[in-house]
Length: 331
Image (cartoon, rainbow, N blue to C red):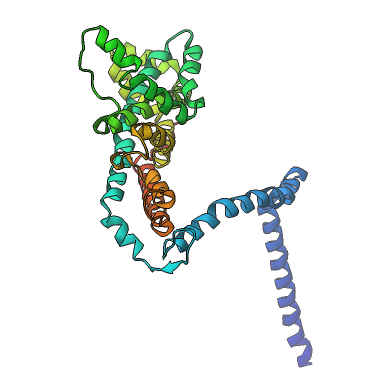
């Protein structure tokens, strides 16, 4: 008679477990609603579409970086035997005054050139915001972006050479001793100026796309409150277009490390390779790897490339964090 007493609780426990499992299944089904055919198709096509892009990314971005990292631990002229140096290339890099000068020139383009670009871009944006035919002006400003920097180098060389148009005009207005525009002491200034001129239209176009999203009623309310042009810019335009400004700042930070063609052509106008006083980090990498006047060293060149990559990544991340703001929804 004792067996049934022990069997009934066991059955009750089994039923309770079954009900608990059913309840969990129902809660799971409630949390995971049945996906639509479109969502199932998207899941099926996710990896087939993503895999080619991942392969290209690994092949053309990750693999070269890994190879450069390994190459930076060696000394190699591209033809002879490779000699291992460990991490000795990195201290030697920072002891090279040419490399530290190249980093300073890159910083000059980043901060001085960037400040000029954004001041000019915002000034043009504010002027064009209320202009009737602003799209035509925007197309004209954007045109330099479509021109290769090599063309700018050749054009500036023709305009500012000693017998160029600029000096010709200055002599005819009474300036008998015009500046040596393409002299080594003025080359970096000219490079920054041409870089700013060629990039302003691009950033003006991007900033205008953000400013045009700001409702006009905000400006009208500010005018009714007695706000002047500077106050409207400071309290309306700049805060409400801050996300676009952040994107532009990161674009400019990344692009400064790639300034190369303009220096190669423009700086080379003095004859031969550009003067070392005008080198940026990109030019340093190129000259150390493909220099024809001294010993080439792909190890030092790779180390310089990796250092530049790390520095510009840190700068972009810090810039993004410093400029982070809460998202603004226009009503």
